[in-house]
Image 1 (cartoon, rainbow, N blue to C red):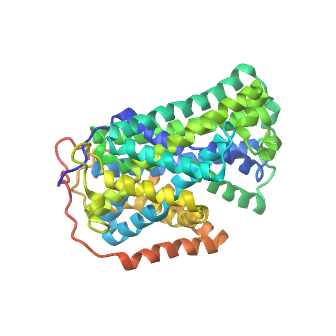
Image 2: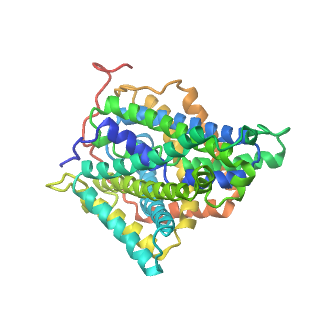
Image 3: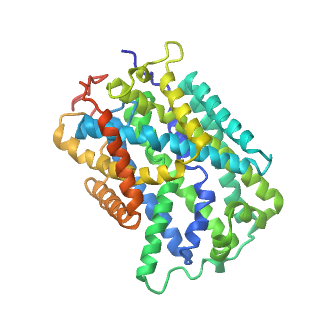
Length: 448
């Protein structure tokens, strides 16, 4: 059975992670957080803490990815650690809601910001949105390097927009250091702690996509080196970019103005260089959303592909294009599902519901490092989690608290998210899985 070739470089993998994570959230979420928390130091601390938490999770994926460098990523790790049934449930959630729903939401955001430049009717919006998905799907079916090239280009544009935002704050000094006061609240009341928890929900949403490299692990060249490097470099870059943007917003606008702003990045740019600044940052946001859509269409179909290879969904989705060596059928399936959600709407509530289930699986996947070290100590581990087991325990503990808090604060959505999993159970049929390659044992080349 033909497998997907390894054509992605370290640069492709890093930009894929950065491009998947940095979408529109950093241009919107700071305003939502400012409405809950007035102290700039606390806001910055939440972004740093969330970033470090994500880094702990990313380090676990680095070990898993170098040990199991297959396309499908987290689905594969679930299968090897907990069995095919749990992997199927995770894949079902990704396939049914997480990827197509997120792409549909990003497409709607792209169309919203595009109307800054071109007014669109409802029909024109839907046609343009679906057209964008089909074009990106077509490019991705023509080769993974072509798909990576498109998202690389838009990632460069979005990073340039953030660099411009932060750079102008340094150059123009159109702000005040007094905006950073008070740094912290006088005391942490129960209400403040609740606000911190809600703000972490927002920041973790902004960091979503840190797991993206794992989905294309089977197509990355020299995976034992490039998978951990790309994951660590990508996450660190995103943390730095998010901190730079938030410090700029606070310096230029201050927390009260951020809280009152609907387009905080545009307002910050306008305050520094006038209306042209708002136009430039809006263009950057448009490019940012297109880049994230492109990255999602690249990584998402690899889950369909892996599930089809295991025989738990339509086997046609597990075929490799004979000429372009891509999972073309899986790519078209992803684009069509996302297009239907874009056309009909209703995806926002689905994403909220799936988010709860998604973090349950993130917790399980992080724990799979421990499970697989006990279950298969003989497997080669070219990279081992730094700070193990502390790194894993930190991520698992905080994510468990996050899941429990979400269940308490958003009980209905959480239970409906679990309902999404239950819907998939009747469609599950156990299959015999044949690994597409032999997992190397510890020995030569291993630092274990």
